[in-house]
Amino acid sequence: MNATARQPVARRDSAEPPLLEVAELSVQFGTQQVLRDITLDLPAGETLVVIGESGCGKTVLLKSLIGLVRPTRGEVRFEGKSLSGMRDRELAHLRTKYGFVFQGAALFDSMTIADNIAFPLREHTRIPAAEADAIVKSLLDEVGLPRSALAKKPVEVSGGMRKRAGLARALALDPLLILYDEPTTGLDPIMTDVVNELILKVRERPRVTSVVVTHDMNTARKVADRIIMLYPLFRLGPGDPQIVFAGTPEDLDRSRDPRVRQFVEGRAGSRLTELRDEQSLEEGR
Amino acid sequence: MSTTPETPTPELPAAPPQPGGLSGWFADQVANVGGFTMARVAAIGDVAIFSLQTVGWLFARRQRRDVLLPALHQIGVMSLPVVALTGLFIGMVLAVQSYAQFKALGLQTRLGSVINLSLVRELGPVLAATMLAGRVGSSMAAELGTMRVTEQIDALECMGANPIYYLVVPRFIGCLLLIPALTIMADFMGVLGGYLYSHLILGIDYHHYWENSRAYVDAFDFLMGIFKSLFFGAAIALVSCHHGFHCGHGAEGVGKAATNAFVHSFVLILLLDLFLGIWLNNVHDFFRPEGPRRLL
Image (tube, rainbow over all chains, first blue to last red; front, side, top):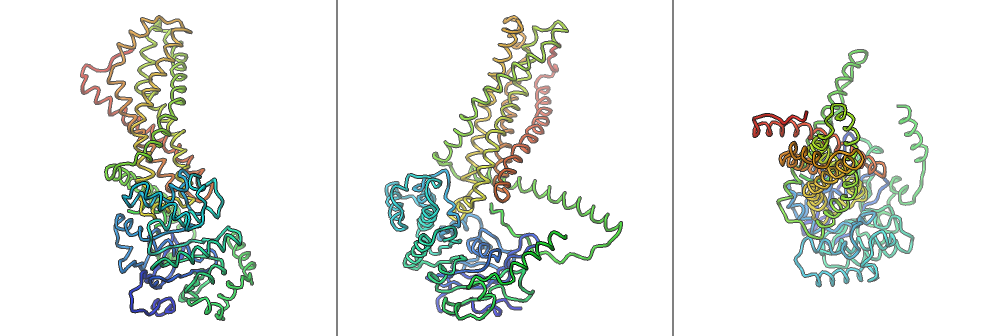
């Protein structure tokens, strides 16, 4: 079956070529297939939110978009160039146009917050130290971190501060595309909203495009221009599309698909029994 | 080649139906042996590619001072006390263990030659390498493993920085450049320990001790140890960093990476010691056709 025809809702008609295109992307680790025939376009300036239950392949999709995971089949194109055929140096250069906000922030333990934020500047630009310091301070202000955090190591600050420092680092090179991996996981409700507000604020930057992977429906509704929902392959039949929903946040609320409704409303349904049966099967083998 | 561990495998075709009974069991065993062999060959190939990438980045770009100096401090300066202490004791232990045998032959004045020759040729370099593998190798594997688990290595890649250049090359340079210094320290302290025990406790004459040492230990023996240590240092850095980079999930994965880094480095040190020892003896014989000097 033609994947593009099967999942037409993940594509948008636009005169302008999309910033990012994913064409029939499949990823398999050993015998376990995680993504199957994912096709979607991401126009410049859009914020796409990817939702779905744990293990459905959201993070693998996000890492595929930046070339951290190489596809088994299909390809990812950024500004029309396929990531698959790129040499390491070419890919490294392309990644300067990306910002990646990791779930656990992934700040370097051995460096201070200031050095972490300045790292991409030192790596890819030749600006004087004083200018780099000024950029770091302005990024710190943008994400709402106090100046006192500059000299601290990542272990000395709270989870929320680490996430904001991770966002500041991702913004350092003024990226065209920002990828957020579970940006609000593990944060209290107030800090979750602070991060949501920051994602909205970042969206105001000229031509910034974002992909946000999240479980959190509040985040999804608040920041998304468009939402897609992935479904775990082991729960799907051989020909079923893995993207079970694609549309606006309003479309999501109107969706009658029971798989979408179960996730959006956070209902366990028969999942507990299914999980127990799966475990029994595993133990019986 | 990418440093990412998440390289997916090609889509696999459905497995053919397996025969049952004895032939099925036999086929399983063959498949197991084949699978094991392929996994080992793939692992060796992976280490080889990792090593080539490290050497490539060693020459591709100069290291940043603020990255290199802490690595040198951690590997060299912090290892000196433990290498010195173990060197001192191993020299004394050699004196303790050799004395009875030499005394039985009435050759106790030759103790200096056997202690010092063993130290500079074998024990100094191997001991320094073992201490480096235990103290620095495990720590490097655990540190890089934690960075892998907490996605710090992925973060480096996402920022367009090469993790091998940033994380492996400084450690490789540190091990390669500083293991000769650590070996010299182990040699010196071992020689000192052996002499102090022999002279002060066993009462061996100062003059005979050093005269016999001078007669049987020459610059080649000393340089042989230093030369071997360069291979040990490179092996420790590459094996340990490779284990860290390919660390499994969670705390268990980090623990296993640290343990395997030491075990595999140690085995490799002994293997290298054997083959380099054989080769260097041939080199020695080539330059000294009159044959080896006889201790007894």
